[in-house]
Length: 196
Image (cartoon, rainbow, N blue to C red; front, side, top):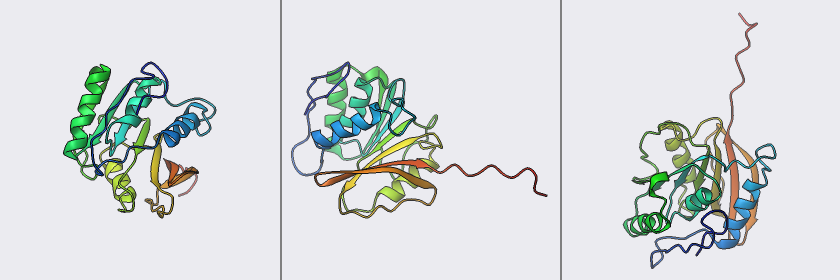
């Protein structure tokens, strides 16, 4: 597994042995970043340059590190599974990007408080465990997700999309066994100032 493009292009990433971590397939990762860099969901402008990124359920860190390679300013990683956490830290160190990365040994359902909302959130939860909704609720409550945050969620193609009521699906794409869902928090309408 390698970084596909950007300043870290071609750099190799390691992954833990066994079934505990399922890195996003290369084809899906390339498609995801093609959509982002094409600006299809962000008014024709890539959201990656200077972005504050959160890679939740980070695993090897491939998504967050790819975002950093393509111009992201800073990446926070949330990972609790010990073998993945060890590999994630090794990947950050091997790429020499520790100064722009923070690795949190935390469960996504119990995240640390954010300093500010992320511009971009990657969520690749274990398949078929119904984690998308509680994870989005927890990340929103902790301040990681705000009205301007673009959320990129990967699920199993057959997995139902269960979201909090204040999230809207902007786009959905299918790649092999996976589907990518692009989400944004619904901004409530401004109160009508003419009402009494």
